[in-house]
Image: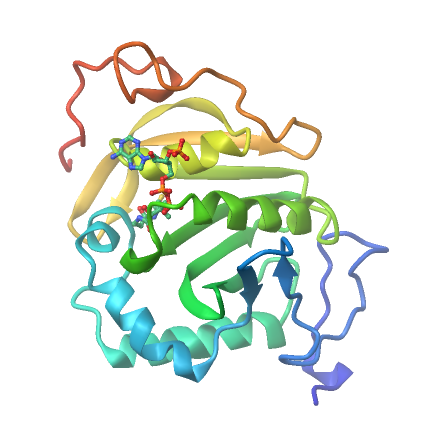
Length: 232
Ligand SMILES: CC(C)(COP(=O)(O)OP(=O)(O)OC[C@H]1O[C@@H](n2cnc3c(N)ncnc32)[C@H](O)[C@@H]1OP(=O)(O)O)[C@@H](O)C(=O)NCCC(=O)NCCS
């Protein structure tokens, strides 16, 4: 049980979440689309699958996870995931475990600025990729962020060439704002990145065609570009 002295105030949207005291894990929102997909808090038993996910080459290539990734990193992440809810402020991360048929399948989170904007991030365990699961998870998180949490604008960013992530954002209506040199700072360098946004009032359907006639290129990006930019 967590009391008010723990300062679990959520000030992102005065009048909606302000002064709400969260008990962990009971009050952490569980998000579901009524099918096999459920978003819940992370649990200690997720640890082995978290480690498996975080040593996957695409996780290493496209995210900022520590490398090498060990059980200790996973343990620290579990503590962070819990404390992000128990020490809940307008800027603390909202982090969920993605589960599929009750199995841990990955993580999705967003980081609010405290001013109505936030940045979303996600990753799936390799066993659960290829079925559009993250598009559904992102949809649930957007519902929560724009609804209960009162956010107004969500930003997505990815290293140029991360087509799976780009399409996940595209499915949910994100609009490309541009390609930015050195946007994505990784342990092994700064990579060119795509950045896209979705406002609360935007339709949650693709706002640009995909695929382009030349292939998988979203947002009209020239196929002649290298699949992934070089670190700077
Ligand atoms: C990004 C990620 C979460 C997407 O997971 P997913 O829900 O399984 O996504 P899918 O594999 O179903 O792919 C979603 C769409 O992208 C498409 N896609 C995937 N990889 C692609 C590629 N290399 N080129 C073109 N399209 C691709 C799929 O065809 C699918 O299209 P559809 O929905 O129209 O059928 C997952 O690939 C992942 O965890 N990657 C590693 C971590 C990562 O990159 N995180 C994001 C950092 S920004």
